[in-house]
Length: 192
Image 1 (cartoon, one colour):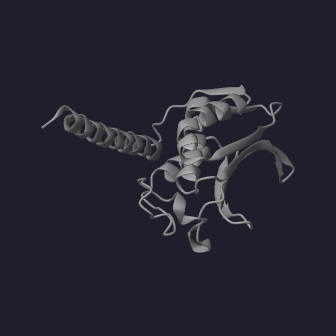
Image 2 (image 1 turned 30 degrees about the vertical axis):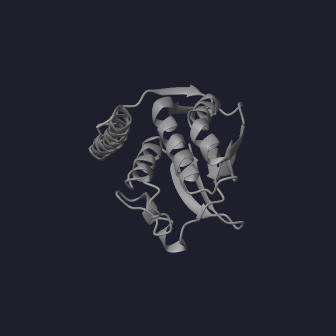
């Protein structure tokens, strides 16, 4: 076997190992979350730097798919959160949006003040123009090992990312939900 073919084989082995490592890490996170053993380091601060970091981490994938991410973040909103874990939630929502968007589209990420029951919250929203979610699946997509029937397109995934995200947000005393945009696509939001 020639060098070029060996290089191709090693590339495939490396990609498979990386996918398995992500799955293993997701399974370990889920087990810790369900057992109440996940540790958090809460700090008071603005979420904007974490949002910028998550957008930066997805920039190569966005470039490859010709997808633009626009964002707006209210720096004045301070909230207590674990940067690593909330970053994990934002990264998951962004990577899902990128997976299910067509080339040449735009994802919007907003972080703004939100009032609910006369209480002020931070609301983070990731909106994409992708395939959307069937109405009867808007709640169940947050269940372990569940993916929307519309998104089972071979785009990858284990059906754990949203389940983990929901548990992280709930551990922060917040809420996370999904809805469909009237213009098409999915909108995922969480409040802290």
